[in-house]
Image (tube, rainbow, N blue to C red):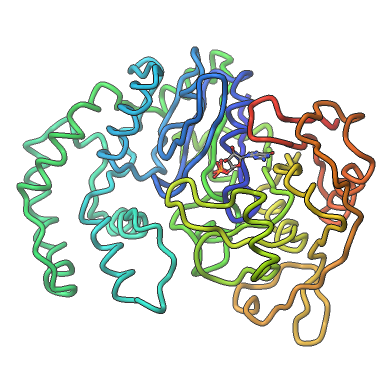
Length: 424
Ligand code: GDP
């Protein structure tokens, strides 16, 4: 059984919480793309955890966690994340954590280049998380990066590092006029943070195939959302990886296997971190009210998120990209602040109303078209059954289902693991 949990929107939909909840029924949780540029926040009986690289299944005993080959891994960050979790009593061993020998290593100079470029852009900045993600994926496709499996042979690694550092300095020192990168610092990084990971590195494709044959259930956990996908997202304001569910088996290391189920996670309103068109955006007091109610500040960076009402145009597209058989609607409890709830049901483009998400090039020119539905104005965070939800909340869900042609099976009503209402 292969299931993916993916974001329908701009990321931060609450996927971490859903994976934490669903992982109860799975043997393996696998990340397959991205790096430490986003964070999952998981709150359960063991505490509050922010996970940037480790799959959320790490918080459950008996779940094996996999970092797939589509990922870019900042080994210092991973090393520290593992230490932090261990300090909180979470056990991490080669039995419950497996890292692909083909996953890419994010180097300190990737982080440096990300920052240098963002600084160069200054006022025109791109909204990078400054975690080196775009530079490391670029090097991966240039075939000038390092894969985790290379840590097994440090002598060979040094020979490659000498060539790559020489090439990299053409940009770091030559282009940006920054102090050059040295082979010594690169090797020290590998030895200090890479060597301790050796026992965790393996051919995870082989492991996952064998596990699948043995009837194990595998859950793929995505980072970010469909609108941030490098190919299907709002180009160029995307991440550098494929965030869509169809990529999950490939990025995990099992291109021969097919997904059985795709679960999309969608927020009951919209949030977006970083730059780029965000059609349904609220500004001023209207934005501040929603941001404060939803606690919308980035888990990895602390940046205030841009906010707005639910966007049915962008979400319908996200649902299609994710091939979502079912959808979880999160943070419904936050909308209790409203007497009337706005929903962006169409975009106005060149005087016409459109409901199909346009090509990114037209997005800047789109204006939101809002409709209003009645709010419920009561605390729903304690609701656990469909019958306990107010009529207006069920109507809100039905309205979204109808406008997005989707099947909403769960509504999340609070950050805690059990704060979920099964609707169907
Ligand atoms: P992710 O990257 O998709 O996992 O999203 P984040 O972890 O960045 O953001 C989700 C945030 O919302 C976390 O702080 C969660 O604890 C919290 N959260 C998730 N679901 C709900 C919900 O239904 N209601 C409320 N109030 N908070 C939620």
